Length: 457
Image (cartoon, rainbow, N blue to C red):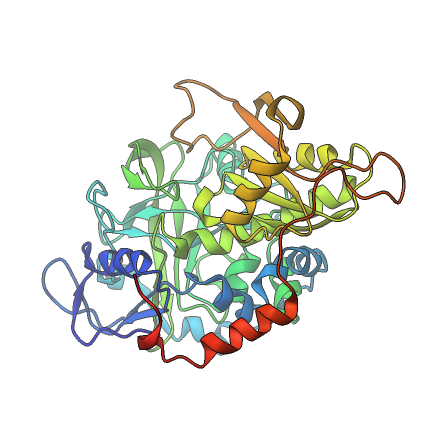
């Protein structure tokens, strides 16, 4: 954990620190005890960021020793839902402080302005919770909000999201849409809310399955049991998205690493803010590993489940941060005829992925140099790659043609060709290697050196 020993501005400086750490390939959790507001005053709410910048740390928060085994474990746990436990507001830490009426002031939160094109401070780690007015089933997703005044902020639910669907249903009924945003929780709970579910389906059970116990929830102050909130969150913002009211939102630095365009988005008029005593404000570094890791790991669980249904030989999936949320690596063991392509097609059916690559178990899917080795030595492009047009995809992808509603996707089978007959070795030479004993001796030589004595060029 890194705690800067001086105040840092919430306008660009905290995000710049994250960029500097990322460039140095360091990913500690960052706690800024004295965030400086735009007016120069110091907020009494500390900022926590880079909480999920490390896959290793996130895996440990899930009780997983090796982050490389997270995909099948995540898929299994979030599929075994545990119903939430309801507690009273009087017992809920997140309602220790209640701000209503003239006491509501969003501008007192140390929300960051991250990038040069951002028009102002954004909530980037706010989990928006709405519900389906037909079934009363709630849904939760991370969706950005631009703080515009003490009581109003923009709210951008991605058009294909379940929250956007719920909002449209309320508006079609002629009603304002109830919505609650909660900020800050254990990383395992943050991961549970990113489980990829059917509609309508609550995330509370998936959170419980992931943490291995019921998630504690409590009725929101404005909406009661209609929208429950995590009792152990840090901050909750409640309000209504007024019917058919749209305002400018953005530009905003997206997870793609590009600044997305300005859009017309709903707004939220805030009715109540609750928080813990000594609350912490959680921020995601948008477009940085901090934001990519949790959702990518959740994607791994979803894609693993999709592929495993049609290809039992699939043993692991990785969605690398280097590919944003567009690339997926699939690892197979002893696939049957056609099985690798079945897995690749299943992976491409997931909306966000636009490139899927399959390799054998001898290739480390968490090592890009290994993946390039497989593609360089096991692929003939005319034989082992194919593209599919007209599939759904992320419209945040900056390469999407203007006006397009669908995308072109690609699959690469970089697995070894199947042997000509059962029991025969694959028709490819064995990989070069030295004996394990020699590698152990080499490791012992290097382990005895002081890092300052390592050979340099």
